[in-house]
Image (cartoon, rainbow, N blue to C red):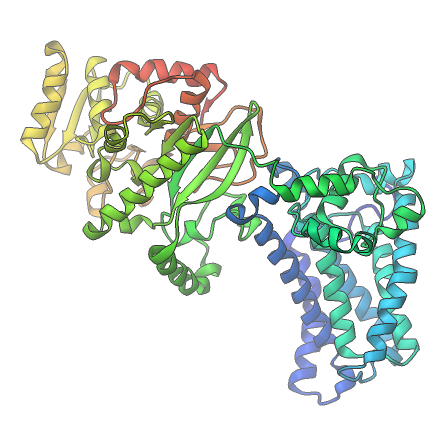
Length: 620
């Protein structure tokens, strides 16, 4: 049993808690559709305010996580990990709580539900004075009280577990804290109502401004220019900044104010580092150069909605098709056209591994665009510019994802290395580790495999490796010439293990399929019952056969000491990255000085695999 009022009463309902809005929604619908009494429209306003409050927190979250805009202004450079995301999952509990409290207040104090005027200047002045005089001082005292031993341990420590605050952190607290905050927040509104100067616009404006300021303080992006305080020093005591509140989150013994640092100054709890740190953060001095860059691209519409700055509940889970997001696809289409017309490569996410910064950059192109002949030159230009930017910054390794290393596009990255022979950054396609992952997934003692995409970089390496191990490889290819070239690369005594086939029927007696090329339903039907489909095709093939099993794309778990990782990479689970991503990580950790582009060296497959395991990467 926890302390009284430390847990939320609907905690066990999880996402079903939103059912509690049901009676309020029903009342609002009745009021709008059948009742013409304006005094009963309070329920409609409560719901609108709830929606706007959620929107404010979401917009602040989206802005602060648009790293291509905000990375130089982040107060703390660490990332938000999955533990914090899960802890803050029900950040909006306070909105539901305050909606219920407002509902009871309107029922039991009907005088407050009378028709309010749309606007009253006196009411705005009144609510501002009441906030500055009563709400601010009361919050300061209560906040300090919550830092006493008992209250901090049993209540407030939950909020402070989030070291890198986000807008959602503002709502992540215990039930008791939000009950108290609701009363503090209600003082100006109730006071203005008692003085008969309240208005509808005043209620909306105060609640929105209150949430706006709380989100600002928790956003971890310093948007307030330091020149503003230099121009008028008094302002630094009137409203706080993200840097100011971040110091409270981390040091806990200073900067207790709600929004106005004047109270910290009056009671000698103002952190002396506040203004100097604010100046430093605004200068952008804390921005670090990444050691490693994974250069990705958008795959399809679902993956476009999986970016970390949109919906945290989506980006922190593997990417799947969500029908509820279908109405947003027209917006995604417009964004795609904009990106096609004018966007450049941008930063999307990051994490830290052994004090080395790893970032993911995204080429502003969708997967289908890589197969448009007229788009080839433009895509190659984007990739080349990204490599040159990484080289100029001092990045050590840049790893090419999925179609960015397509053989037909750029020869697996080799054209960039040949064109720019003085590159300091190491360009890596990561396919050596991809091949190693697929090969180590195969069951022990396998005698025969059916291989599609057999003449690609990966297909060639897998075929040659297996042939050396005495495994018979049925290579699906229509090109006799390409097959013979690959076959001649194998030692003479193993060439007989490579067999060209031209139809999918040839795999009807083989239960191990390695899929490197998209296969249609009619082609999957030739696999015998019990077949396992290993695959290295993006996007993955459809899981159509109930009597077969399907492997995911080649991937590896990052080492356990990864920090600040809070997004899932496409369809991968938490802490899992594509093998080509992991291959670049291994390249960095090993300190290898060669480029990994073009054809895969079969002799290095085992070496790269062992290096990955040595550094703590684990097979999925």
